[in-house]
Image: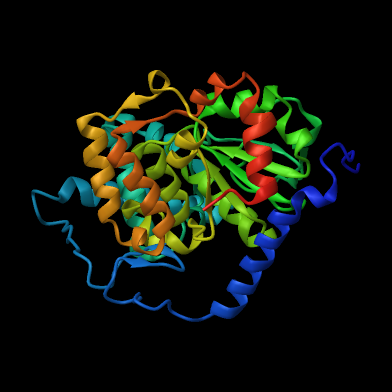
Amino acid sequence: MAFAPVGPEASFFDAVDRHRASLLAMLKRDAGETPAGATRVASRFDDSVGLQMIPQCTTRKIKSNSPKSVKKFALILKILSMIYKLIQSNTYATKRDIYYTDSQLFGNQAAVDSIIDDISCMLKVPRRSLHVLSTSKGLIAGNLRYMEEDGTRVQCADSATATAVPTNIQGMQNAKFLLIVEKDATFQRLLDDNFCSRMSPCIMVTGKGIPDLNTRLLVKKLWDTFQIPVFTLVDADPYGIEIMCIYKYGSMSMSFDAHNLTIPTIRWLGLLPSDVKRLNIPKDRLIPLTRHDQLKLDSLLRRPYITYQPFWKKEMEMMADSKMKAEIQALTFLSSGYLSRVYLPNKLRFGGWI
């Protein structure tokens, strides 16, 4: 079944199409090259990949004959045996499933999560190769068709509601762009306003805050498969920026799997601190930065990847100078449908991303 042509005319996407062409040219030009100023050996950051685990990282030994580590050693062997059985039988389990096989032995879910990450890092394979999955919390909507492992065909555009992010997909359909939305409330509002239909063909994803592994894997697979522009819509605050950085550059805890999780071509579509100023959002709709916000913002400004994003740095410095932050909902001051009917369409049409 073909998607009905309900979106804007083709010329609307000229800026998006030019951006995609520049991304493809950049990928072709930089293939196999290391960016100037970065190194794959001595640094934790590579602009073409994101945060990576350095070879000279700290390691710890867990011995079977040490009273301090004997329980940890036993738990690792227990989980390794379970992983072996999963691979042998070609079946999958979630981390939660593994915990509940013997909750008294494991003690808590965090112990299982930590050991599985250690095993994945030790063997240098993605967690999925261990046949261990995470429970999805993310949602996806828009012009996307895919086939699940069991052969079930899913067509997101057939539903007026979002679809849970799948643990694995076998086939997908193309779109003009992918929009990552930070918060579930904003994602649901865009769905209610039929944003995906009016901006068709597009795909929209939310990780409901800090993204889970499945959401990050899906976003990465969409980029690898289609190389379509990927934009983020986050609050103009330090924590929204950090979530955007997780998608773009990864996290320290998963740095050993950066190649499978990061999309360094991501662009910041909104909400930009400069947009707040440009649109004359009243001060009573803004929120003063807390001490924790200021510490987080200072931490972000010191991170190595901000060196590669001078426009991001300028926006963050503007936030620091104003000592104010803004949620996406602040745009409702202009009108209830301003975000979906004016702000985002204009940003996409005229290239308002950084």
